[in-house]
Length: 265
Image 1 (cartoon, one colour):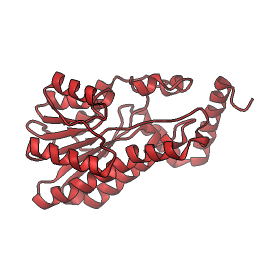
Image 2 (tube, rainbow, N blue to C red):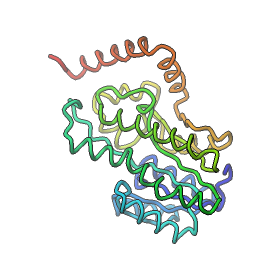
Image 3 (cartoon, rainbow, N blue to C red):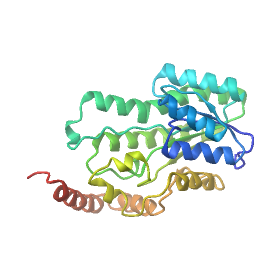
Image 4 (cartoon, rainbow, N blue to C red):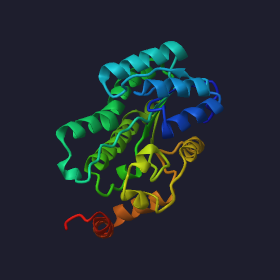
């Protein structure tokens, strides 16, 4: 599916940021797009501005994602591309002490939303023989880690892990799977990162539109990992080649963050 013209596409978390940029790029490529967001006003505004169809709601719950898939199928006739983009970060200054409620919310949105969407979509794609494309917006944190953000790091690792499993299990049956893993992106989440903002932008923060462009470019060779920041690939390779050296370098970064935040004093 290198040509998105006429494809039926769904984007979750499309009210702002990367999701909105992905939806806009899909529309520009000629796709028919359904946008979803928990923020109903933002969802409807995006749909109106882009010429898409709004389907606001909670894509993290099983009932919510099934309602979204049913509504989008009724609108599009068939969902060819599903971009599971919605994600949250409830990281607090001491993320080891994050509450069970925050962990549960992030697991639901950053991981289980993908599982539940695939659970609803894959049988349909296999059943009609037409295949499909399932795209997870993860993070470089899902390949490396995120200083000071235990729940975010763990859930993004899980998101990449689920995408890998989905590709291994169904890739030979016509279902393409991808994971988009950017570093710093100019979104509300980055603006709220506090002292970590400088760390996240050390390799330059991209615009959401640049992330969307990187995903469309990736369709040419249908690669699994979409790395809008190419340097993440080198970091990932270094981590695999020598985990101890990589961990030592990350601990040095953590020490710098501790100095900035006064942690441990």
